[in-house]
Length: 110
Image: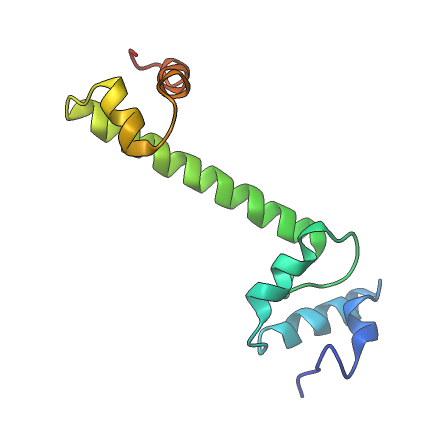
């Protein structure tokens, strides 16, 4: 039987591994899981959206890394297509100097 965080809130703030596991499992059935995880973004304790605060921070770092890799791939493709730094900067919505610095860090000519 899935628990509701309102019916058994002590599970979501327990330090016992079994309670944390139950809370995480119950979160799997929750329709507001994503919103809850966002609420737990700056919390130190508890289970939020099926994740502990450390797991939320790890997921956030992973998303940032993935977005950076996608942006780098986009830059590489634009440069291969012959776009100028100014044109790429406009397309990407970033300052030209920021893009030029990024190109240098990526080992690409700016």
